[in-house]
Length: 271
Image (cartoon, rainbow, N blue to C red; front, side, top):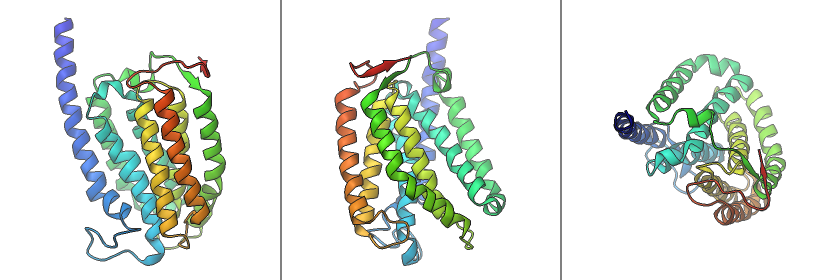
């Protein structure tokens, strides 16, 4: 029986990796996570025409969310996917955050883009079904060991991102172009805060998720410094602060979270 279960999990692992590659490539190419992510520095990459100049920082937000946090998170799970259920949990909930933000900030656009809801539902359903340890995604047996340092840093990030997220809500409500540009920034901010909370739990996969977060802050900081006056930009000071925060965050993650498993540190709150 154990041999049969092991064989089944092995095949599911192969299937999961296949779909992870397919969906990551789709996010980077078809959903333009890569091309829009490069927009602050390379205009019109892999596009028939460049975006309007005023949308270039919004494109960076799209690249951060779809390109780094979503697509790269799937690629990060190709190696030892069973050790990263927390990353898949973030991927699933992150998409729900994206769709919920779209629905709440622009119902008319959400109705017009109903196929996106169906598409994401299919993607999430396939990944969930193909993951060999589905129970560990939302009902992990592993206890939380809340890391106080990372939890405090997440609180700092929330305070820093709050004006950006509020600006995104108001901008999306007042946008008549039927594009989810301002609201996507809000979804990005919410996804980063949620990822920060998950990382602070110190559960299996938290290290990988923390590194992805740090990379996202550094990327958004670099985009803000490159486009300091563009709509939605964090500006020169905000960009520099984001880069510093992202680098410090990665250092803390690497020092306090052991690879592969969760380890309770002296500053951890067990639950």
